[in-house]
Amino acid sequence: MEPLNQILQTFGPISLSEMDSVKLMNRTDTKFLLTIQQLESILNEVQPHYRVLTIDGRALNSYETLYYDTQDFLFYRRHHSGKKNRYKIRKRKYVESNLTFLEVKFKTNKDRTIKDRTKLQSIDETLLQSELDFIENETHLDLNFEPKLWNSFHRITFVSLEIPERITIDLDLKFKHNEREIFWQSVVIAEVKQERQNRHSPFMMALKKRLIRQESVSKYSLGAAMLYPELKSNSFKSKILKLKKLNDGMVA
Image (tube, rainbow, N blue to C red; front, side, top):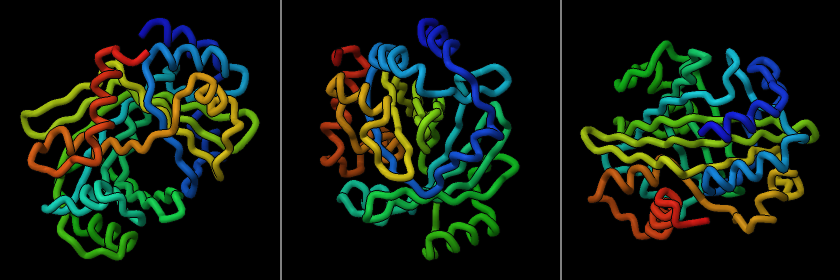
């Protein structure tokens, strides 16, 4: 991790309050899977074009997430079958900034992501009535939800100096359900968030040069597929195999 920390120190900082101008709550998301080594090479190349979110001097920030679904995994099953217009419900704590939100994400059939959230005091597995009301207001679904899995990771956030674009880099990904745990130590999930997809951004161009292609990646769905062996997961098998290869250092 030390080489990555040294690279991050070469980026100009941006504060959480300055990030308000690029919230991008209605956006396109483009995701990629890569290794730490590939990430380090890309960051060295694109450094002049981005600033890095820094909180109390830290560019590597911690996130804790609890995902919810129905008892029969409605959201998971819709993703597995390739359905559009699907939701994701989670409680997320942004550790360094000491902020916690209940978040509802909606992936439209136009491949846009719309996120709404409401502030919480802490992550409690039980959904309060006010939280259920918020979910129903956002989704128009009156369903029973239950906690399905915990996810924690470290995130680096970059903001473009030139276009409305944020890039999140997630690493050290851990998933937990009861006594079962998964740790993707060497896997990096990069997500490019833009008002509209621009494949000519410096980060996107650096990925293309290295033949790193866009992937459909859902931390919730992949984590659930690996932690709940009873779930149908045929659609995710090739992605899980790639994650295992990346984690074992078998993908250069």
